[in-house]
Each structure stands twice: as structure tokens, then as C-alpha cells.
Image 1 (cartoon, rainbow, N blue to C red):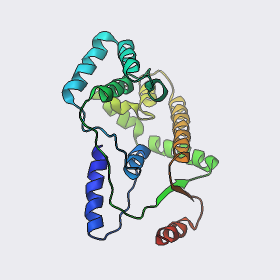
Image 2: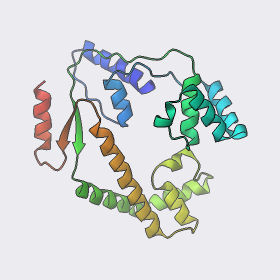
Image 3: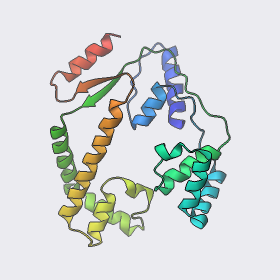
Image 4: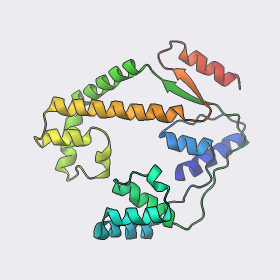
Length: 225
């Protein structure tokens, strides 16, 4: 909601100034919520409600929160990872928050949504090369510094792919090649989920990132507006 409200203000200003705009993601959900003008976004989290639910999670356990969520929103079993405490807590927070929703309403720009695609084999090669490059350029040292500062698996930042794997290596629970291989596999799975998301994206024009004329094609599409 915060992203959409900030973006809407910028777009309103640009439209009044007769300017064009480029909106760049970011997560797919942010772009979709903005372009599809979602009408049920919630304002910034209620700190008191969030603290209350966090305490309940600690004292009553995940099962109790799942039971309440399903009793209030049965359809949540189709959309929420009920084994993930953060997802369950956030979903219940949204259900219990009685403040009015925020609606996105964009100015009447002529819009075009462009996405990049790549051959899967090429993408997989890029993922492996990028992961190994990150390790060569100090990723292990970064994770060691975070562990030394008291952070580690269980902290939100360690949910990013690769951090827990490298922490396991530094703790002597796996070797470096094993940690790198797991990170590559997890990144490929994430890329697959991204492809699935993009296939359902409304009004998306796909561009082949391997096409040497891709930029010219994109410019032509934009000029056609």
C-alpha cells in the first residue's frame, strides 16, 4: 500500500506536467497492485495489533493462530502458507485490522507493461555464474560478518536465498560446494516461480532478452502508444 500511494503521487504529478513515466519492479505484486489499481490495500501495520499477535504466536503457538485465521477466512488455506508463522500472522493481522482499505486510482496514462524472458537453459547458466561470482567477490565474508554481529538463520534477512546455506557452511555443517549447489538450485526454483507469476500477469508484453534487437523492439512498442 505504501509503495502504491507513493507511486500514485509521483504519477499524478507527472501526468499533470504532461510527462511520461517508467515504472520499474521490484516485486511483481507491487507492480500488479499499482497497474491493476487494487482497491483492498491496507494502510501501514497497526503496531499494537502486530505486537499482540506476535505475543500470541509465542504463547499460544502457530496452530492457534491458524485455527483462528481459518475460522475467519476459510479461503486462506488456498492462499496462505499455513506452516509459515510470518505469513499466518500477517494474514490474521490483515483480517483483524478494521481500518478502511486504500484504493489505487491512477491518472489516465496510456499504459504498456513490458517483461523480459530468457531461454531457461541460458537463464540457468546465468544463475550459476552469478552465484559463483558472488561467492568469489566476498559473499562468504559478508555472511561471516553477520554471524559475528549476532545475526543468523531465523532473522528475516536470512530468508534471502543463500544466506542460510552459507551460514551452514561456516558452522561446519556442509562444505562450500554443497552450499553453493543448494543456493543455485534454490535460485532456479525461485526463477521458475517468477516465470509462473509472469504467465498470469495481465496485459504483459513479453520481450526476449536474448534478441539482439530487443531494445529496438521495446522502443517501437512504446512509440506505438
